[in-house]
Image (tube, rainbow, N blue to C red; front, side, top):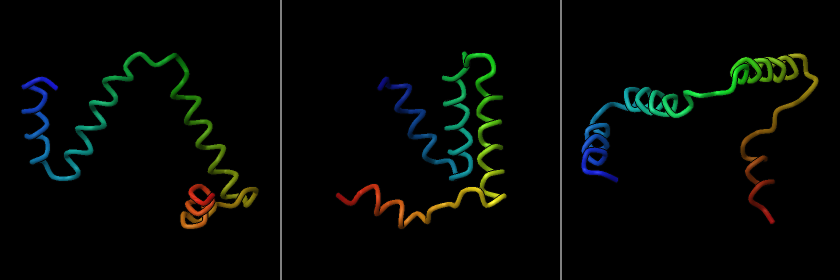
Length: 74
């Protein structure tokens, strides 16, 4: 990391949690500046579809403890 990057990082750590999150989101968004056309709309449609499935009872969510056990138990 460059000297400037390290200095900015240290200064960013002085921000409160909400400000750091907002800054991180802005930095990430700046990397995604060249998204394919329609990608954001497609993700929004997918989120809405999944929310409808949950709301209708078509699918059931899995509690985090159960999912974690499934993922990390051999």
